[in-house]
Structures are given as C-alpha cells and as structure tokens.
Amino acid sequence: MRKFSTDFFRVAGFFTIVAALTLTIFAQDFSGEQKINSTDGSVAGAVQNDDTFDKKNGFSVWGGFAPDIPRVFGGSRRSTFGEIGLRYSRRIATTENLAIKYQIDLIPVAVINYRRQRLLQLSPTTFIFDRDRTTAYAAGLTPVSFQLNFRRRNKIQPFITAEAGLLVFNKSIPDDRSPLLPNQRGRQFNFTLAGGGGVEFLTESARSYTVGFKFHHISNASTGNINPGFDQNLFYFGYTFKKF
Image (cartoon, rainbow, N blue to C red; front, top):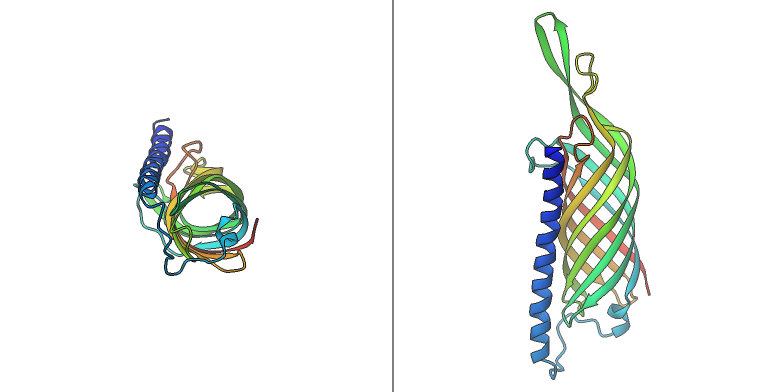
C-alpha cells in the first residue's frame, strides 16, 4: 500500500506540474497576444495556407523504440522496449503561438525484453541468483495524453507532451519465480506514465511528421507481489495521414 501511494502521488504530482507549466505558458502568450494585435508581419517558415494548421482533428500512426534505460526510480529494471500506436488527436485550445491537443492512443502491439533474476538453491548452503532474459508482448490504451505545440502557425513546431495509460501483457512482468520464491512476480496488467517532447513538421497537404523522445515508465502500482518498475528512454517517429 505504501508503494501504491508513492506511485499515485508521483503520477498526480507529474500531471500537476505539467498542468501548471502549461497554464503559465498559455497565460503569458495570451497576455502578449493582446498587445500585438495590429502586426501583420509573416514569420520565417510560416505555413501560408491557413487550412493546413487550422484543422482541429487528426489521425496518426507512430512507432517507438527504447534501446536502453537508466535507473531513474530506485530499483527499476533495465529493459529493451518497443511499441506501435494509432492516434486520434483534437486541438482543444489555442493562442496565436500555442496549441493544446488532447490525444488518445490505441497500442495494438508492444514488446518488452528484460532481465529476470531468480533465486536458486544449489546445495543446503549455496544460493545463487540465476539471471537470464525473457520477452513479453502487450496491447493497451493511452486515454490521457496532452500535447502543447509552440509556433503553431509555422511548418516546424516544437512540442512537449504528457500522458498516462495502460498495457496488458501476455504474462506477468517481471517474473522471478523459483522453487524458493514461487510468488515472486508482478502482474499482466500495468500502468504507463510518460513525458517528453519533440518536433512536428507540417506539410502543405495538411499532413505532418513527428520526431520525439519521451521518458516512459511501466508499473503495476504494487498490485503484484513485486513491482520494481521499468524505465525506458523512448525515441519515436509518427506520421499524421489525415487532418480534418
């Protein structure tokens, strides 16, 4: 229960900070916008076709891969991770320079390969940790995702993002069971938390390409017998093929 509370407050704190920063940036930009309403100058790199950046909805496909991970949260497990996502996004608020999007991702496939460690007894007085690697597959959903785009009337738009979701694996992760510790495993159902940023490149045909990075965390929130968590440095590429 203590670990669950820690995870809950970590998630709540993360989104509180993101929300506060977003509102601060938005308020400053809106204030500045009131002072510059009469200016007509064009910005280098601006998209000339208003229809390109005024469409509110979009469908995208994206994929990400994390080749290595640092131990950011305590005893988190090292792993390799990859996923593919299908996204619907809707712009929910704008100023002259900023845009906030709500996004929902369907994750049809995700793969994690991690090192497990099982305690084995070789003799009455000899114990060892047997370490090997195993792979698990998952599908999931990210229903809470927000993206803040800067320079929203330009072809090149930096952005920051924050999201929370879930993944259901084909087996419990991690799984460190052994004859000595038969219950040493996590859960198939896991929560995800991510935050990061990147750049969105718009085209004249109302499509866009996205390159980004996000820190990605997987946890069962202590609903399993063990919950070391998995941290990933996820690099991803996306293509928005439909805007309307």
